[in-house]
Figure 1 (cartoon, helix red, strand yellow):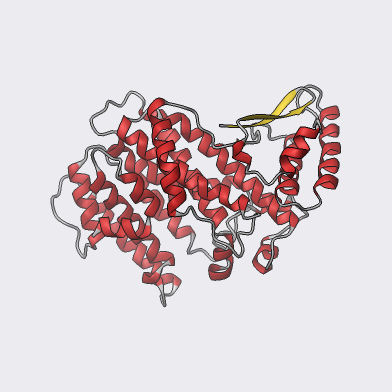
Figure 2 (figure 1 turned 90 degrees about the vertical axis):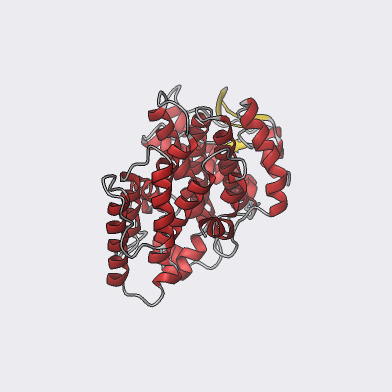
Length: 395
């Protein structure tokens, strides 16, 4: 039954799982358990239940989890669901499962039961939530992906795995803004990120019917954050055995395709749900598989900003660049917005000598962004600012 659940509700993961050498059934058990947990909070199983009743359901999951991880007992948890039984079997088949990631996920689900669920003031709060509901999955599945290997790279594997989980959750957040706003009155974007663009608020997003320019810029910033985590995760893929490397690379690539589709949809995630079609998946899969085998660093034309500088000038740089991306990608008064942001970048350069370069508005730069061609077709384009590279768009 766990396999059927995965096939029905996790199509990208199910497709990638076909590349697994060992542990496929156990990975389906993990997915089934995680989905059942999510359904108790926001799904059909929670329909008609009060918040207190949902919280008690989570209490039951936590108690059964305690019994599953009681290594001294062979007793099956009382009132076990099919997902509990599948997880119980998986923990007895594969060595190395830890209880903590499962408990952390339950804590994350409890946050969705709070009165102001999704009301995050800072991105650090978003990051913490993303770890709890998705980064934990990487820690859960790592014993399966590393069956038969030593633990020499365990810490780095864990760290990079969590980064991938956060990247996937950021993709979900970006994809589902409209659905979360309509169905749950939630906005999982940090208030500090919204405020950067025209002083936008959560209430503005909840009532928004059509994406505004400032809203699109806020979404581009979230895309940039997700790409940062995908880049971090990519460094950990090579630490996995080959069959597991294929799975991790394919999951990351397929989800990132969804993320970039939001941009291609002109950032309208209020009315459109981005997805990768079956044809796109089939076309992308061989590329991802080959890249993971030969170890190529395929960035899918990523345009990544630098998040290492937390200063005011670093923040201004990211805001200006997001506005440039959106102005050209969505065709909203491109020339005027580029010129205005170029002036901002020049001011940053003057204020922080040698640290933040200045935009060079070459004809090639403007033609690139004005073209209808997908960003990813440019193999090694660099946007230069006074001789320094702001970002690369490379394959």
